[in-house]
Image 1: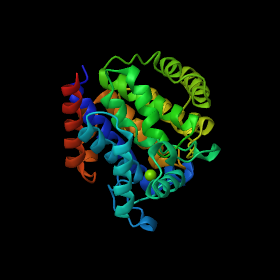
Image 2: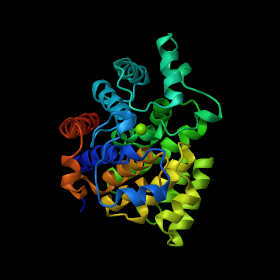
Image 3: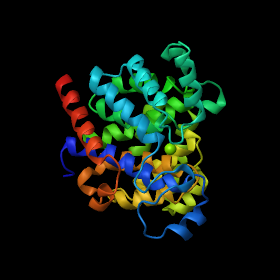
Image 4: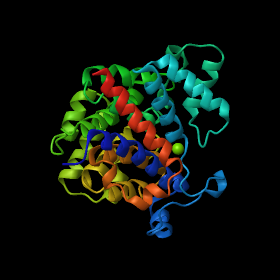
Amino acid sequence: MRGSIEDRFIGSILGLAIGDAMGMPFEGWQPDQIRDYWKDKVFLPSPPRGLEPGQYTDDTLMTICHLKSLIDSGRMEPGDTAQKFIQWFDSGELRGIGRSTAISMQRLKQGRSWQESGATGEYAAGNGGAMRIAPVGLFYYNDLKSLKEAVRQAVVITHNNTEAVAGATAVAYLVARGAKGDLDPDTAISDTREFVGDSAVSKNLARAEALLKDNASPEEALDVLGTSGYVVETAASAAFCFLHTLQDFKDTVVNAIQGGLDADTTAAVAGAISGAFNGRSKIPQDWISGLEDKELLTSMASKLYDVCKRNE
Ligand SMILES: [Mg+2]
């Protein structure tokens, strides 16, 4: 038994923030540079960004917006979520905001609605939706039917692109099934692909499944699947890292970071999924201790669970 559902809600949110904060200094690095430099260190600073060890980035900041909105509204309420994104944007504490998100924040501030604010076109297939979707996956863990539409509404605020929605749907699905406790590792990817439907995200997930079957190393697999800011790559690489070391949160996050490039986001997504599946109790205590705002994140995840239960 992997702890209570509440423990898995907390595990997912802490797991996301830990992956983000641990990957943060390595964003844009190549895998071999990271392996040479990092060794067994945990949190490191990012001097160019002025961030200290254990600080998280935009991935977690936007996740917090979703947490607040779901707790306040008692459901996915995209108009309210958009307001919370703007409050964050206006705070100036952006920590690596993505291009599509910046565009959509300007549009919202000009008075466009959440349906019209999201960036469009092929460059909107970024991972900005997938990186922050864990709270939505948790909230709808027992209602997969509603989950799909909730994810779409959450993503299009900033990324009005079918692959961005597909990637976030894949991540939210894995988080939801992990939190519920009924995810079958052997069929996890085929179940996810069925839920997501035909898409480039689904095709790259099939590649991840084949690499898992061939017992490929994470190094080899992430090189094939990709670790850029393109969500098709992020979803597949994070799913691979999770399933490759199913019960080992630590190795899942380390492997995701060592894939390089968009290291904070790949690790945030892998951490959110692994944390939902394994629960907080499987996250190393010293990793939690070193994380910025661990109490706040823990209490928000608990509150999300309470609101979710009240709705049932
Ligand atoms: Mg980031």
